[in-house]
Image 1 (cartoon, one colour):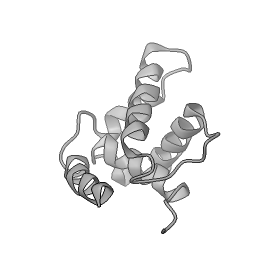
Image 2: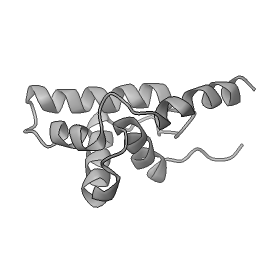
Image 3: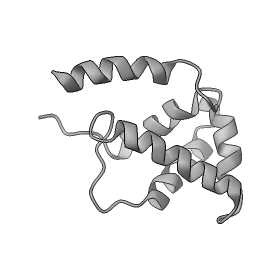
Image 4: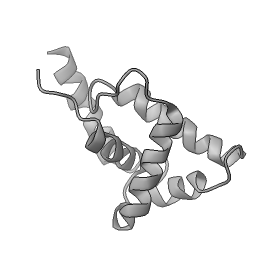
Length: 104
């Protein structure tokens, strides 16, 4: 019950305009590896994972942040029509396609 309430409270924050749009996140993520801006990309993806894992998507224990950032970048490159949406909702969409939670 607590998870359902948490998800109910969390989802509206993903629907509202976020700090970054997908266009802005993609710009940060396309910077060279090791750059400050690429670090912003990794930090953003990491924050969404920390909030959404085991609620909005379910990651395996050995997955890396680099893999998740690559997954989000791939999603943004393959879905340019979605980039006007908030970066957090795009990140959740990208991850939940490949790592949905199994029904209990």
